[in-house]
Amino acid sequence: MIKETIINGNLSFFSLKKEDASVPPIIEFLDDLKKSRELDFKKIFKRIERFSQTGFIPNNSENFSHEGDQIYAIKAHQIRLYGFFFNGGKEFILTNGCIKKRDKAKPEDLRKAKDWRYEYMKGAQHHE
Image (tube, rainbow, N blue to C red; front, top):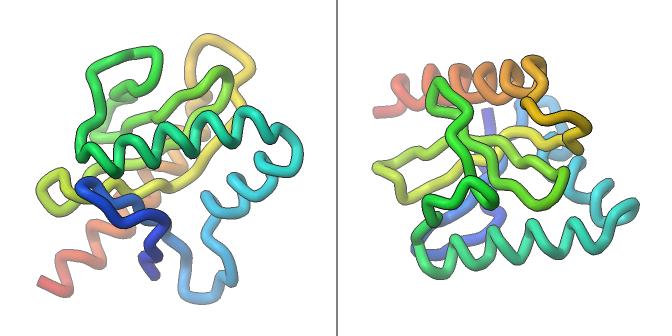
């Protein structure tokens, strides 16, 4: 598992990729989003930049929500970026994203985020 920096700040954002992958899945999602829905991309990326600069994610269910099992969603319209906090809340690791088409998160999107978190945490324990 390889962790790559997306934005450094008071709250830093990272992506994860498997050893044999050329690009992290969240970066592929963001690149596709930028091409197909540029305004949504700008809105959600601006939100990430603001969270990074302030080091604070406001308790606002319109922008951010706890999805259970230590998985969170950064939200903008129908866009969801899933991830988890690490390093005492100083890092937010983005795992996957989706364009939501219904009210509730799809179980498979949450499962992907949980699987990434599990794999990362398993590896992090071996490096402590």
